[in-house]
Amino acid sequence: MHIRCVANQITVSIHDEIVHQADLNKCADGKRSKHGGFAFQDHGSAV
Image (cartoon, rainbow, N blue to C red; front, side, top):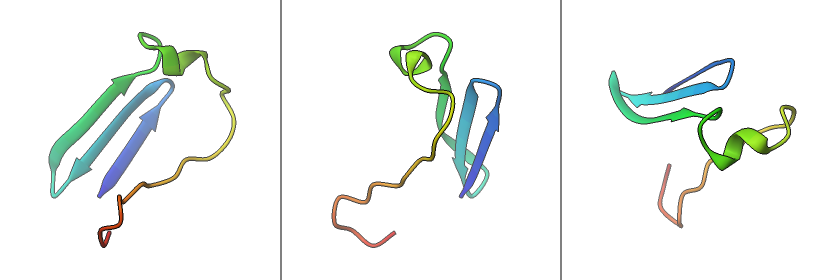
């Protein structure tokens, strides 16, 4: 898994395939705090 964060652009890829992209300037998440951590959610499955 590769997570790339550049300014408010976030890209997540697994085995070189992009599985998620977000531009935090264009969604409600961009209004959240610019500081802090992040976490993975596994819904009870092995990660």
